[in-house]
Structures are given as C-alpha cells and as structure tokens.
Length: 251
Image (cartoon, rainbow, N blue to C red; front, side, top):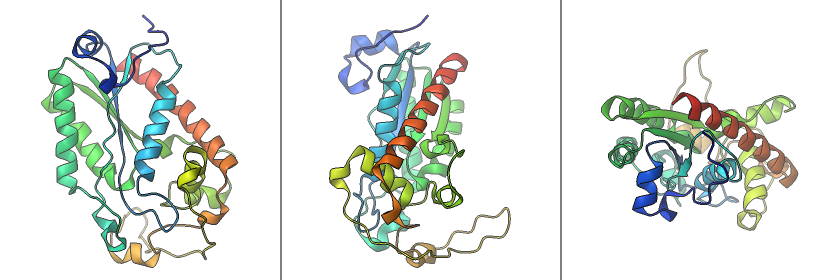
C-alpha cells in the first residue's frame, strides 16, 4: 500500500485519533541536533536546523510505502566539549541517551513500531547508536539510525571538500546554512589549515585540547558557497528519501 501526498506528517500537528490510526503502520522520524557554538559566524542552532531541514524536505511531497511522521526535533545534544567557547546548551551523554529512549518508549506506548533517528551533531553519534540498540531490545520497536552527512555522495568532491565533511562550522556546514538560512550566517574570515591531534591508525583519540587547537571550528568557512550548499543539500535529501523508502519496506 502506498500513502500518497500525506497532508499531515508532523507529530505535533496530528491529533490523538490520527496518530492512533497512523502509528501502527508508520515510520516515526526523529531529527536530533545540538545547540552549541559554531565558530564566530554560524548560529548555535546549526545542527538542529540542518537535521530538521533534511528530514522535512525528504518527507515532503514524496510517496512512501508507509506513512512518515516527523517527531519534534531533539535540539539539545551532547555538547560538553564546546563549553569553553560559550554559547552552548548541553546534555550529558547519558541524559541524551535517556531522552531518546523515552521517545522510543513513548512511540511504542502510543502504538508505533518503527523509528528512525536522523542525527545532525557529531557528539550525538555514540549516544544515538547506544539508544537505538537499547530501544530495540527494551520496547517492541525496530530502530534505524543515520547521520545526515554520511548520506552525501563523495563523487565529484575535491580532496579538500572530502576532508571537510562533516567538519564543524567549516565549509560543509557553512555552505548548507547559506542554502537554508543565509540570514543567520555572518561573514567569515579565511583561516590557515590547522593540524588536529594525530590518531594512530584505527584508533580515535579524544582530548579537550583538540577544540582549542582548532579554535572551535574545523576548517576554512570562507570558501563556502550557497550554490555548493544547495547542491549538497539536494543530494543528501535525495539519499535520505532512498534510505527511508528502503527502511519503510524492511522495518
């Protein structure tokens, strides 16, 4: 069965009767982001803005094998590592996991059986994976999880652009924000490449000094452009549509 052109796709725009009817067959999509410093030029809500935009555009005006319901965005994430720069609201990682688990529990209690987290913040990756795995065993739900930037096809990107994806407040996020909310993007200054911590092959090293070394943003935002942002955003949205279509069939 195909649900064509669903008029109501947002959880908070549906009433309890509509949700009761839709949830047993629906896929509930939860955007997750953060409210944290993004260098001197991007708004603190960048991660939440981008995750939400990707999800909304992927669901809008598209036919899926099941109803798609967009849950309210979890707009504060695990961002303690940005406290040194100010402008940051953060949840402890265990608190963030608990919130996602409570969302999954709520969906299951209301009759939902399928859930997808679409994440927009690097600090949420471990907690999202943990919550997805735990929710699938605690409640009667199938759970998918993806980071939106992982959906960007790398074909056609320069070596420098590949290194900048996803980055933090660099070319990638700045280009996307120029495409989504240019009114919130301040002019940025060129910056010299900064060498982060050296990680042994196959090992990820974490250290508080990493963020101070790169001054809170990972690469040069001045090379960002609205045209690049629009092209990348379109590609990510199209890829998410493909993944949601597949998930709707297998979950």
